Image (cartoon, rainbow, N blue to C red; front, side, top):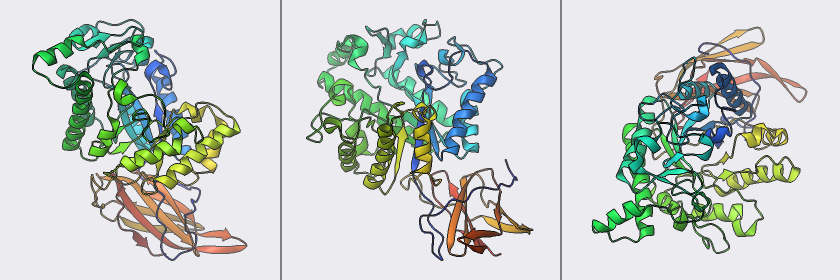
Length: 490
């Protein structure tokens, strides 16, 4: 809360002996929170408002306590909304009835955004651009796009309904939904996963039923092959969204998490599913063109699985990252709590650090793989996530550092209270307080509302009682730029 003080554990820096303050650690540490089929939240449809909020806070507290710094929250699982929307109905997965608002009323997304930011976490909204109805969504309501806009929707053999990506009405609707979120909520990112044209299993392994729009395209003189025409429709949406988001709020990141293999044979040892030719997702093009701010291919395979090896695929995507966007792979060991699985996750985090040192980070599928796996949670917290970290900066969005804050101290007995005030409050997302005992530095990352921190006047290092010798406070803005440090004289 604003104005409160905190006594916090010290976070050791990477360089323990120096007259200069250390650089704060930078790494994207995110987890997906899936609402479709109530995978992660809420635990079932129709919970009370209080129960929903308690579950949300428990998840966000867990992320903060385990030194994560971002959450990717699914707000549109099936052309619906886990937030107040004039464009789409309230989600079945929230209240158990599509179109029914929570009671007592609250806006779940507004709640999640504020609670995440209070814990120093970025919140990225995750949307499915084309799914119109999921088989776990029960009956199709009169408010569903299946009923309101049947001209945009096709039925698949497995019970799913899908918007036709080639229809201009589909592209317009998804763009309107995304931009409504960007304009009305204080979000940090917009995120799509791997569902573009649907997986073949959804349609009994038959081709996507878009004969109507394909015939209309050919009759209008279209010359592309059917595959190229489908890919072009998805490409148009991705480029349009990136441009639209940046025009409205340049600091809001656009992230994509496609299937982890672009095409079999890329690189040569890779075998498996061909998203380019089956999902009609030319994910390599989007990365090459820089139509993303971060790219999280779903590399859900182990390090030594040769046909789909995690580091081999990450290396290939890294070579394709010619615009130097953030490359933060999606990783998953499900809920396997064996020592091998725990080690696999830690090793993948470390491999990612080594292969993308200029912007480290991974996204965990899903939050339950950690919250319901105590061994993994402990291994991550005591290992790679031992120190808190800021999200890496995005210099192509903004490279102007915020103003240096004002800072002062008050001393009472053995406690030093560090206080600071911003020179420009609107853009500050974090504060970093660095402090030094003898030659040993520590730092603490605080959220946008915090204005003070308590530390001990002396610290025992070895057998020596060592006094606090230096304090430096910096401000960090929404795109990760850090101000010059304000040094406080003791």
